Length: 225
Image (tube, rainbow, N blue to C red):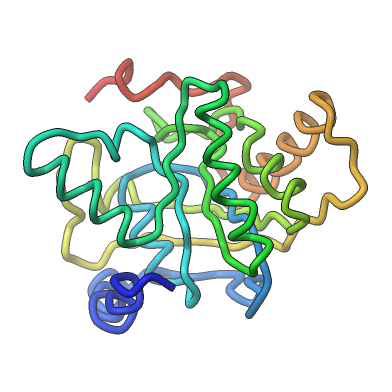
């Protein structure tokens, strides 16, 4: 576990848990050891912080590569903070550059680490659950680890779109962890990855109760702010 993450777990983590008072369900589905991919819906920037607060072990988040290329003081701060927390940059444009995220995450999972992926690829613009991209399932099958579906509700009120920091008050947020999904032996061709991803999204929808949209969410720069 990165040093900064470890410090945060014993200092900031308990404080935020006390302030936010989130409801946690299905914690027994999180293994005490071994690699796992958490596949979660994405309502707010606060999702990452909440997950880090309630999951005991280190979580490595797939983060947009743009966060690692920011300019000025804020860009410098965010880049080095993410690096210190063990985040993994993801190039959303695809191609060989995008595969670097797999190159970093697969060995981590095989060593028993945990990686969080948001299959929607971006924050939901309207609270609905959008079609998932296949990266989470592809990562899990490459590493030979299970996927745990995660359903988060209420974080859009903790940190609404456009708000820089989450509110320091009881959140009413809930995070639910589903049972591990083992895709060992399944076909990993394009159709197979699509089918498994749809299964994961179905489980996430069961955990959140969100309306499902069978198309990809618009990128953040095309969402209303």
